[in-house]
Image (spheres, helix red, strand yellow):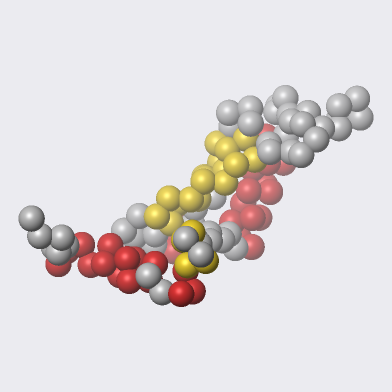
Amino acid sequence: MSTELPDNWGWIKRQQERMSTPEYIEGEKIVRTFTTNLRMEKKLYELLNEHIKVCPFNPTEENPFPAGAIGGVLTYSFTDTHIGQVCKVNCACGGEFDITEYEDW
């Protein structure tokens, strides 16, 4: 059985090549980073300003840390696709915010 990937899987080949370079490897761990830009953060800020009005994890004077002392209210999720990267932010209450810049695809 051949381990050679088909030609239409070139993006996987390129990823494998990038992952084998020293810049991506620290010891035995592969380092991957995902970033957001100012427009994405602004979109999230606007969405959260509305969401915080109904979110049970909204800090109050009586309960300044409703999700625990170390936070963890927001979880960022990045998904690579063939045409771009999807970024969703999930709130601990179940709210989900898509801040992907689809117009750039």
